[in-house]
Length: 319
Image 1 (spheres, rainbow, N blue to C red):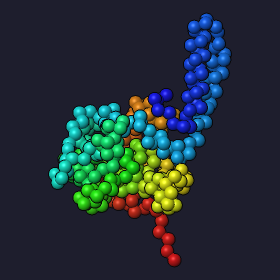
Image 2 (cartoon, rainbow, N blue to C red):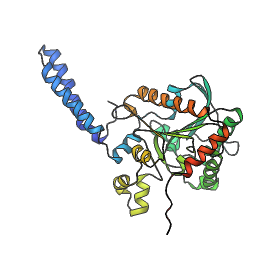
Image 3 (cartoon, rainbow, N blue to C red):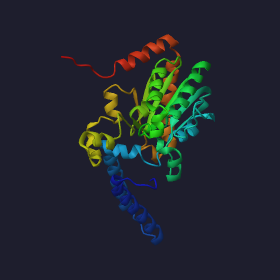
């Protein structure tokens, strides 16, 4: 299991530790305990499926935030070849909370863009915990417009609690940068595929997620805000985050039912952090299938279907 255990995983970890101890004791003492070990292994397997097969929205959030969960940089390394990172928005500077560049995906040139949080405290601080500034979204838009110019599909990876809301970000036009991305992405004449790989929070997530096909990892979350922010606004109490998570409809299953996303990508039992390579292979197959399908559409039809897709989300009730 990963080094960091989530609270609900501890009973399983304790049982697996007992199994390991029993196996070691059996070898050291030369005593046949195979039946006892098999019984405990069967119990552990049942417990594992019971735990991970009945996750609450809050438990999925803790998995989505797991520091060992593969992020954009990991998927770039596992799924793409020859990635060449590009920096800067040509206005203010470079934002390390968003990474982007050119790579090959199954031999085809593509543009890859995604949020980056970091794996430890030092990297989290350097990446601003995945909270992007306006220059991050402008960099993403610059790369998407470049992709359109050269006919490259755009693949984005969403993993942010939200856009950064500091004074500097507001002074440099955070809301404008996000709005510009939403408008421009809706009209880009190349296939755009967005994948929510961890947290997808608010406009900070949507700014790189207006796509023709939206995928979401099984334990990822996607919502108007974090549960903590939602609880602070609704109940003036951020400690009610778990209650907020239960009503926000932010899990992959909820969003597929609401037709906000198009496909759920299964994860290894317990989350992508349990087996990143397996998670990447599964995601890669779905990305390739979606891309092959979208490439068959002429640009006019691509834009028409993209428009219809987002216009059909939600319901309007009058009277």
